[in-house]
Image (cartoon, rainbow, N blue to C red):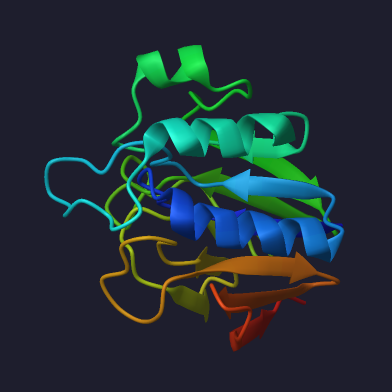
Amino acid sequence: MKFLIMSDIHGDSVCLKKVLDAYDAGHFDKMIILGDILYHGPRNDLPAGYNPKACIALLNPYKDEILAVRGNCDAEVDQMVLDFPMRADYLEIYADNHRWFITHGHLYDEGHMPKLSEGDIYLYGHFHVPVFEKTEEGYYKVNPNSISLPKAGTNGYLVYEDGVFTRMSLDAEVLETLGVA
């Protein structure tokens, strides 16, 4: 499987367009969106490319290729304009012999973790900080950062292919990799 994974778009159509261009060029199987799709929320500054209506128009053509979860800035009304489901608090998928727990990170976090086993992948966003680590318990914690409003590091997205997560900048520069055994 080959996935492109992004989080915390926050209505930034300029950054989203760059990621979708990478998706189109990369021949991916699925796009995973970790929430906070259209709106910036009261604690975030307005992204430079803020245009939620343009984000809707950019994302809806990919409706059959998107797996998405709800973020803390997403609302029920968003589902009325997005053609793909995005209201689940988490998704579980099984890919490449790993169970993936996919969530935004505002409900399932360090203080309230799901039950994870060795080899599982906990994939989340919300904090706008990249995380790539294998825990002492043997599961993987992976956060791609925000594509629009990073609080640390470079804004970017993830590519997952053949057991390797690669964190990419919006200019398609490799920032770091993490292999999952």
